[in-house]
Length: 104
Image: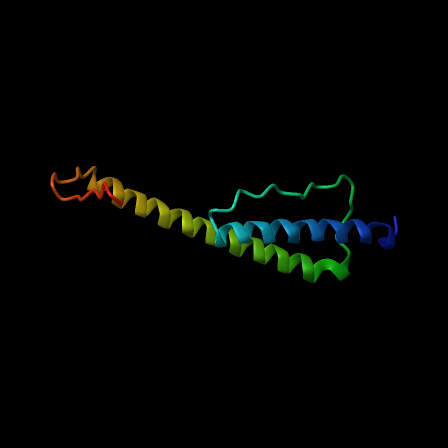
């Protein structure tokens, strides 16, 4: 099998991985966005990655690692914040401390 035959497939694989990474990072930047649906699907029998894609693939791997680490840090931070909230417990409002404007 020639490198030419598998190069377009590897190009498509790396494009899909880059797209999914972009969606994942965008979700980290804005948690109000809906969870992304990954587009990557590992192709069968794609063969080894051609040398000309090694740098791109290594960069993607490092970017994924950084994004996952960021997500784990955000998850830990959120867990700590939720722990602090639950440690405070429910605080009932004090009577007479609120004003309701009925004419508003």
